[in-house]
Length: 203
Image 1 (cartoon, helix red, strand yellow):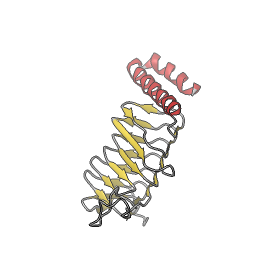
Image 2 (image 1 turned 120 degrees about the vertical axis):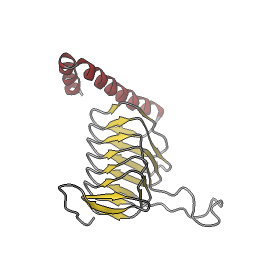
Image 3 (image 1 turned 45 degrees about the horizontal axis):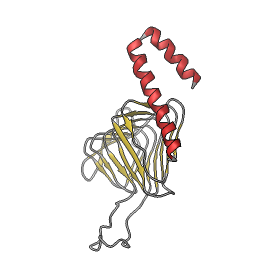
Image 4 (image 1 turned 120 degrees about the horizontal axis):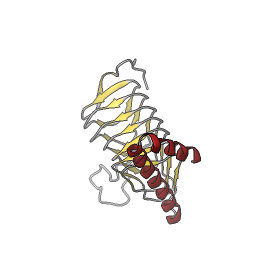
């Protein structure tokens, strides 16, 4: 943390406007951590959490951010069970993403998450008796590997796994397993082509 503030001082001297923005983002990150601790919310963050927008953590589960995570717009990592875990890897940018987690959502390092929805539960049964509280509801973990980019208005549904370096384009609805190094689009989402300079690898 001391190193971050020393870098910030150096930046103030060289690029004051950027330095002010970075300082405000770091201070919001610190305030968020303190606020969650005081309220008993199970939120953990590594070094240099930067919040440019708003981070609203709710629920009884754990939310874990790695080092150098940046938050833009309004991000809502919400859990619905004490055993639920949302984990976001280091050096990721989370920009307006909504999470709904009953069990497990894990995001690899260096991810870019746009204004999308990622959930590991359907919340309601697909059956006709969906209004019955005892009706089984699908819950399945979600795994996005490192350097995945999720575009705006994307839906990532329960049980989805996306391989490293892959990109999901605007409005895609992902369900199932997708390989590494591919561009994914559509509803239902499907592989369109390899990413530039990447060879598709079965996930």
